[in-house]
Image (cartoon, rainbow, N blue to C red; front, side, top):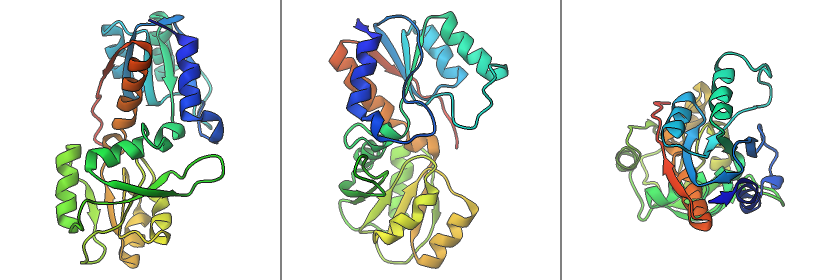
Length: 253
């Protein structure tokens, strides 16, 4: 068992949440029991994940996508009411880390995606003096043709990615950012990447990739962001002697 306050303080410091200007609060979002013995993780704090946490008698839920986003309706009605009622009614805490979990150099979504795909990390772009860049740069183990990389993504992530072809040359230098980072494609091009990998695509992303000869891969928002929460949850479980389980609530986007 661990004290909720101590675990959250540790994770806040580990991820450097004060270094990020984010779209939501990071850390403890909903307070439940003071002690944590069982922690359930997931990508998004959807109702299905909360129900899984209740079934597993969890004391806290750890996610990448939590609540209270900038610009959302602040009223506690409908879906939001049902979700909060589940947490509060069962004394379950909600702990969420968004950009800080994307960027962490070891436990973060980008770093963990590199591990899953066998990519070496050579740097980041888009950062500042306080926080590392959210776009990672790296290389495949060997120069790889785009069709082979597409098949590799499908095999490792369990879904066929959208691929917008660039040139016929093998991919030697890759840039990636998990989730909905398609607007960062220009950073990838400026960094000299042959390809850019993220979770989602926008209409204009296709034209940018085609007209600049840059391979673009959209491999799924959920699919690319499954691994940071798992790494962080496992780390916290080891540090605080917790039971940790990851509930993968499927999302095709």
